[in-house]
Image (cartoon, rainbow, N blue to C red; front, top):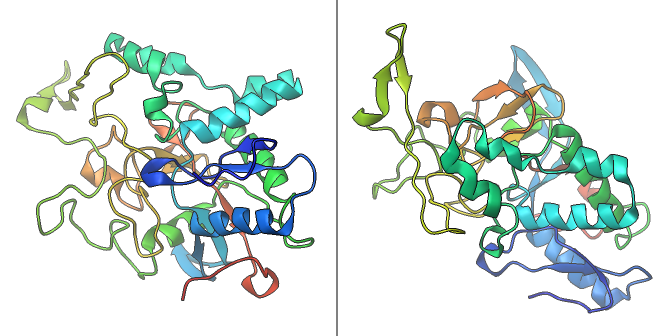
Length: 311
């Protein structure tokens, strides 16, 4: 683990999956050696997306270069934020930022295991945080910005935020002009038959008709022992394979909140394959068990000496 000192306030800005590090930032000044460690880890866990343009809603939209979190923000990321928010005594912000675990039990009694374990059990620290509001995600971005900017060079700070739709699509495409899914192809399995993302897989027994004689999908949920959740729900934030920009889970797993639209994008574990395409959007109506978020920050590589851009 990339622990710098026991005397620092802990802030996690990346997932624990596959041995990623936990960062600790100082309440006072950080010496140059320690700051370099933090900046190195920061560079390793954000993907750089170059400036360009994208066709969106029949218009061409220009995009400045930005960095994007390689993974969806996970439970440990968010719990550390809530812990500091609680310690600060800001009750109003804490109320806005709280995780609504009651979403797990709405109409599905089998989801009680998730309500009890998903957001607090150590086994799920590196799974995407869900059941949070857009306002809560925005507060997280503000908190993280303040923390990181304590150690970045003066005048080279970051303003973390939720991505716009154009930015999200640019990142999802991974440097390709047009593609159905983030990995660049039109199929949900690779040549070895392996599933490429976390989505709702349907068989004949999952399709029925409702009272209006319309086709209806009935998902199947599986559970293991308490504290063990089946992969048919959510997968770790860093799982499957990254796209051309080294970004994970842009398709499926948790649908992601956009900053400029009342929408979530990319589909989720509750959506069938067609609905986890890059272009898949649904209306954002509040926190839900299948909605999470990922963060970005606009950057100018020529003015940020600490930023390492992969060629």
